[in-house]
Image 1 (cartoon, rainbow, N blue to C red):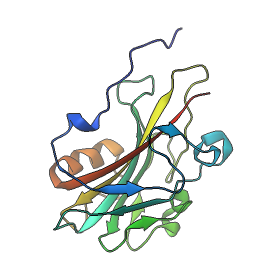
Image 2 (image 1 turned 180 degrees about the vertical axis):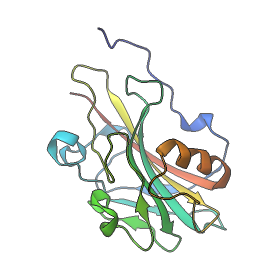
Image 3 (image 1 turned 90 degrees about the vertical axis):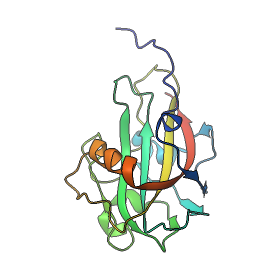
Length: 175
């Protein structure tokens, strides 16, 4: 079976328009290959992320990592953290290890690999370069209204109605 296929479009411009704000990382350089720490086979360590300039009215954040280039229609969710308090503007490297490493009442939603935490890049061997979109969503409510049993799809559905702004940085990886 060949995995040759067209490159999937960047999914975020396809969503309802929102304000944008800034996200930076000590570990991810926008558009560049991820460090080994962010690769499944070499560490599964979530990257450090800092953000600023969120829209007025932000009451919480959701952080996600999505790979639209997975060879499936729905892409692959590597990380989903909900209900990060509005006064938090950074996640340290490794914050994706467990709920205990997250600030306040924040919690993980199961990633598409089945784990509660960050799952590093893991594209099929020989596949095209994959993009990993780390997105900080500014939410206009203190809680997104889901719990840890929600799927990433349910989180995304809720974000469609509650997101005030997005900050996006992406890395790449291929075997």
